[in-house]
Image (cartoon, rainbow, N blue to C red; front, side, top):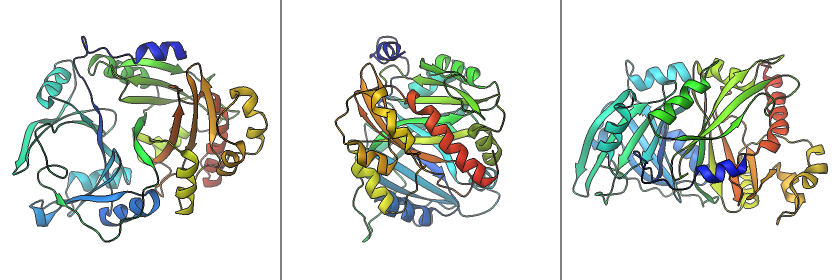
Length: 376
């Protein structure tokens, strides 16, 4: 399985009709962007970057842009009713709307994806100011989520035209979050393979890993997942669907409360997960609780690691290995009142996989939370 992954993520620029440079930003539609920005700065260590709203000529919404290293979040709120953003929040609660992808040519990205069956979301649009221009285009993906292609090679401004620099006296220190490692989508019953086909045919991705209900199951629930990656491996989108089980799976719970398909979690990379998670916990971020029994045998399964086991156990960090190395990962509790969006913090020590050996412990932890909410 890991060998397949290693082969799949080798650069393939000769046949890659949609060359991606990585994730440009993740945009969240939220009920109160000003408060959300304060939360992400305080809890996660983001810095103020840019703002757009009535003062910059944007009359129907406001957006706050925050950044930490190469990780950029945009938090957007509608200012009035009868607004697609307001409708999105009413239906889904706070959640991910845009998974924006950096490209060299946004017009070509739009043309190549739409001619292969992608449904247009945003026709190629040029935004410009005295700092240059940004070209945007976009297509729909699962649920109400969209991909926006961002071409900013001719722009020298703070974020993009229409935004001004957002200076703040309150800028907490970074927690060591670096960039988006992957984003996971939850789709409905029997919809995983159609969306796999979409990413293969419309965006030129490849299915680099597959997990069925034998891989991802507990006594009560199960799901299936396939990991899609673009040609150079910079962008990876695992896709989950429910599988039959005795009780409701985490994917079913998400679909119920999100009222449809959407982005379940964003996985964020760090180079020092112990330091990052220690700081996040001190700032109030809550993570899933892993039972002590997990750590009694984990080193027998994964072998020697560089880190001491004690802080990993104290923090609840999971460990897994493939034939290229190992990884350390941890999952937050939902960031919203609805049990929908959460975050994963991941440190890769060579491993290119996604923690298959941790699935059982992770899902049992999720089920304990579901049971406490009365949703298992």
